[in-house]
Length: 231
Image (cartoon, rainbow, N blue to C red; front, side):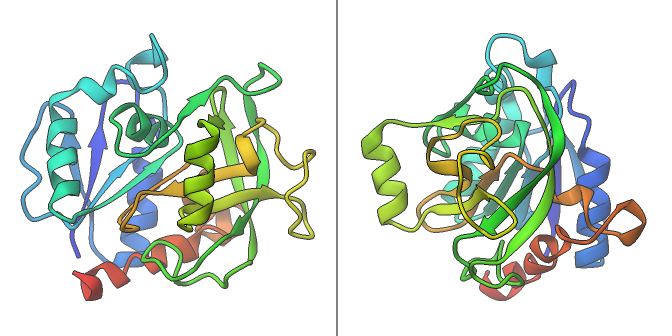
């Protein structure tokens, strides 16, 4: 399974993603500059976190217009896998590969802290190494992580099983207190229909090694080994 990481000006989490991918997949991912348009040979495309184009206009709005994103859209149409983390999630919504939008956090403050996520389903190539309903810790670092969508879209996401992760407390309850950025229905991550595209706001790539405080995020990257079998 071959993975590529998209680089935009201002992106700053590409090394973290690369370390997590190489540790789990055993191969160094390809770094793809935003002006490139050739994604041939890649099974998985990852858009990491950071501040693409300085977060001018809306977060992810300028990156969504980069030449590489046309190639990412075509990659997705061919059945390729796509993972967007934090700013990557924002870019995927701006590119209309995922529905909804990410707005300013409810408290209008940048949040840099750990949160807890609940795995809503584990029958995907992104979550197969987790137990359904498992609660795991993940760092968050964003100012615009408040996921919104119209009620019809939210109902569709729920009804089609496209909610990937929710913000929860230590007991696994999706409480208001656990929903630090105010996201609709405590949604922390969603899938596109077909389950080949995932966007989530927290950073599992920053918890893949005991030396950095834990391995709660490692099962997500270990799960990606299933892509080779599913292709």
